[in-house]
Length: 395
Image (tube, rainbow, N blue to C red; front, side, top):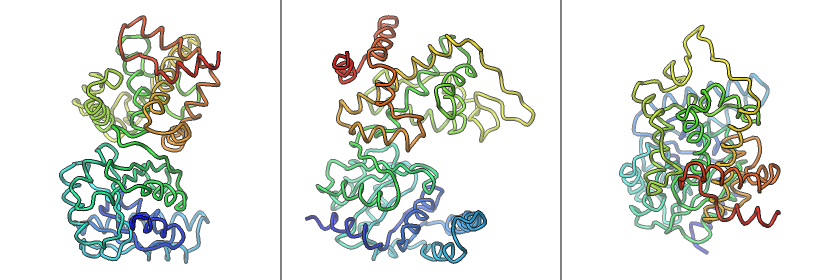
């Protein structure tokens, strides 16, 4: 068996030394997860100030955990003591696994991994936390690209259970499965994904935003009504509320990236409405203004109380989400079980989309998509062959 696979399998039963590159919010969160699993952690960042901020932020989090009775003071001190912060990449030399969590720029990640590979031993496994770049492209900069996998944690890493595990084209056989097992041992909910644009979550979730924006552009309903329609079927936030929470700049950039990487497939086309909000600096909560006004005392517009309209909105967005989930399975991006795990554990969908489709009736979902395709004449609304076949089998 490959030495990298042996290394990850060994970490399941015997916590070892884990390197984390990048002491921002994500890297610090992953460091906390690894330390909580009993591992010694080497947290590396070129900026000493980033390491100091990381240390202070973790101390506050641990103090709250102790205050709420979720851990003892000794347990808190022990977890924090397992994280060693350093500016020196050479300190990763004894690490069995090194996870990169830095800026989403391919050339920067490739440069950092070239440095990491020089520092670590021959049997060390490597992982990238990229959310939008090809793991295969990142691996291409390594002398031994077969040692790299994607481990895409969701923010905040200590609280969000999902980790997408993504093998590169070059990844050694068995390494991704070992990564899935290790993430489960760390208390996470792993989902195995093919190295394709958006992986699972950022691909399947696009219609939640895109179709909501499309309906607003068409004048079918206002933002508050569209948000209300999705809350009524179980979502914690509506699409516009969630885009404001994420940040319109961030959400637009992800959509544009997936659209380009998918060779401009119309299903992933970005919205000019969102682009204009980003250009205006109306980024959402962090800017005090987005689709809604977050200034003190500002009132939220009331949704339309039209049950039929709310139902049509939810039907349209759900049909597009379900179609995307089936197509991810059809294109062998992931299994049915993994798409259900990804959407419920990564973005807190109230139900798995495959299960939801069966509950709603597959024939209805297909009929909704076919009606949209007939109305608009756009490839955007094409029904996944797997979804249509499942509907025929259910009939």
